[in-house]
Image (cartoon, rainbow, N blue to C red; front, side, top):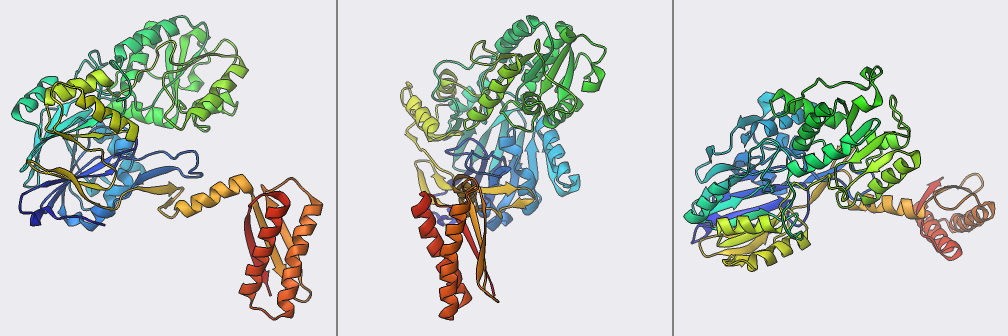
Length: 554
């Protein structure tokens, strides 16, 4: 690990250290360090890829923060999506209690999440701010919060004033001119910051490959209303539970179309309840439960449910496979997927969609009609922010390498491109000064796997074993030495029952065991010899490499 200390530099510099969310989508967390002070931004999680079998979620590795926890002066949260706050229950209890600043909805969702983990209000210091508010963190960090539209209310970027210059961080954003709450991005403040001088811009790269402008939520609402108006039976709509703007529009659409809304799914209910309780969501009619709809006709019902990413245990997955305890899909129903699959979830979503078709319901999903829009800016919006802020240096963020690189290329096409752009990775120490912008070292970064109640007790070696088990199967060999040597085997996921092959494997193992007994070898050596002999035989006989577990009983 290399970690140059700014306090020892001849020229004061700021360190910008992405610990997650750089070169990936998910588990966003930033650290800024100036001298003996650190400010942290966000603390998200990521969801596992297909090869990360059994893993529930992934949180950022925070070794650097633990090592320097005495330097942490405060925390800033940009918004309430899981990839920005979902890791906090695993992170905050391990670090000193410092002020955590964010807007009302974000803090409400954080409180709900911390409560689920048994973390009491007194154990954290949550402080509500509004766009336009300014706070001082430590002696060196002055933060001004800036409203930026996204797919959830209370989303904010910030302008960070430091001894070396001004940093603008957009947070997740798109420049929606017709957001559900009517509150547009504060482009005037970004332009003013550009005139005052921006040393570094850190900007959302998620849609840097997409030309044009990301559609407005208002357009999506109009399209959804047209679809729902044409449905003759029950409607089941799924979207991201955190897309509060989308769900708010659906509630108004349902009211206008004479449909009562049933919220189905734990996360959907949680987000709706928190948003309603804090005044961020208005329900024209009270929500119903699935038990309340018996007196209503089909055309009077709209279910808003979880499962937009094909999760088998979410509501839509259980409906598709007929395992929901109270509701069954039938012909005449319409299922609307107002979402796109997150990369890696395509197969799971396709499985659900195909199953819905087999049931005989009407299935409607993007791109035609356009019933989903990203919460992230496309190229025209990214160019607008670059042109307004006119940064000297540029750090594309929130995206995989292809998104970062395409964002960097876009910046170079503008009339006034940044003087220098860096494509950083998690763990890079980006040193920033008046004329300095470079990667000067690295710190530990990466992911920590959460599996059930275990946090960090599953590593890549365990995941490799799980992959091998799924692909090649398992053979357990149990050799008993006395009174007469014999071997029993158990196979799982290897081949279908094959008595002849089982007999041959036992014979190979037994010959090795008997030889070991005759030669009075150590038990460990007999076990290793049995492993090697069976490995060679199975590979030659079947071409496979199952996991072998040899056991010796004396």
